[in-house]
Image 1 (cartoon, chains in turn orange, cyan):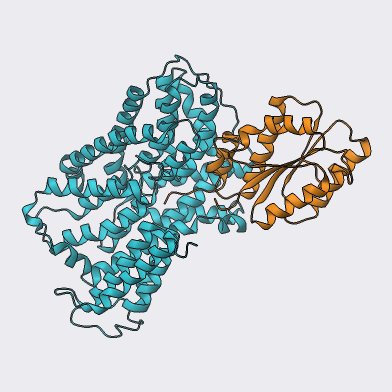
Image 2 (cartoon, rainbow over the protein chains, first blue to last red):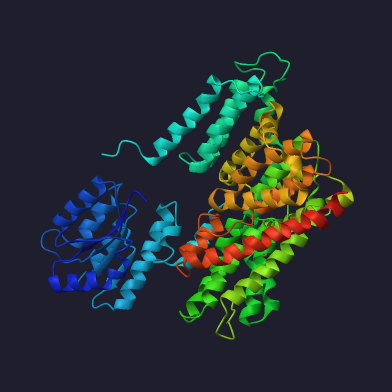
Length: 165
Length: 466
């Protein structure tokens, strides 16, 4: 595979960030994890990854951040062709009603995880979102059977008209 | 900095290989034979090392033949003493060869079946009688996989069956060898099941296409009479081998397949068309209507009713049809220019007994297709077998149909490596088993297959063919 699919975590509290990274270490071998402490840094990381020919498969984003907030970042990503397909997940305890509505309507939010999360629950969400991402965007699904939802990937292959040769 | 990748090197070698015969004068080989040799070399190198997709090589082969070997090409506008050039339509016409049309019908039917979940629902129904004991569940899975892959692509069947076995594997103890047995049973049964009918898998098409160029038409029924008994035996022994190598520890598997047959009018039409087409195919020898002609019926009905729509047509696996057509086309020139005959007359065949030749062709086909695409292996070997039979150098009693069958069937018996077939690649990707498990089991099945092919070719097939 010539391009990598990244997971990006945007979170300003170090302890929370560490916990998130630790919970996702199973995925690291297949989906490198990058981190950013605010939306400006996140945008830089995203530009760097995209410029090097890679993709962002999933972003886990806190809402209340220094500077621009998380929902605004997700809306920006939704309007950019390089990140429109990225699966967007809010991980927050503090997004108000209106911000959440905005995230759903304008950023096509894929999932909302409220803090505190459970390790199993988080991994489940990440697994599902990345499975959907690769089914929608990748040609060769076989490389993800081990780490993602193999049953769902097989079903996708069944309908993708695979042939012998 | 790396300037030349492996692909660049393969392309360079292919092109050099293509050019060399133009500057050589090989005794005993016609001028056109030299050109055919050039095309054969570049095709073989491209197919083997895959610097470009294998279907792209096939398309190139057809173009090269039209350019250099057809009556309309640059080299042979007139017939010579040694070579009567084919019209270019002979080469491009392989795309409408009856076997290609048969495959087209098979693709359309299989797509419709998947679209309306017929494959899943059939699996659900057919698995029921096999109960909940692991060994019978594995047998059931193999029978159903084999049956479906006889009419659908082996790869699509494997992908569908994975959705059935992955939940079972997930519920099984990690240390239970049952997991490995299950994960291997599906791709193996799919590879073997593909042998059963002409549309089961592309190598069968290569064999049938090559034989029809020789004026020998194999009916759908006839193929099945030849192949199905072999498939049953190999499938059954594969089941025993898997049980022996990966003895299940648990004594019960919860089988809980949910689903219902779709009952809208389109779905019912698909069931009827699918059933009717399969029945007409397997009874070809009773009514005498060619299977390729029958194949047009489902294509027409599904197109007229909109079940096969514009997107559906665009998404058909056309690359497989190109791949097979290119192979058939190459065979025309290898024989027409005397190239294939030249290759085989360099060996003193008459010293070999028929049984030896059967074993050699079967072994070479199995070994080649473990590493190469099964279709490519069959494509490269069939012209040699055809010339061996038609030139008479192999002596009396060497049957063209027999040796072609040996090659076609053997190409599907290669399943030692993840790269051997796409179904194998799917199984290994689940992470349930290691390559060494596949290699060990695949080796046993390959050896057994080799013995079975030899026995069938010596004792059973001659009874049917004569």
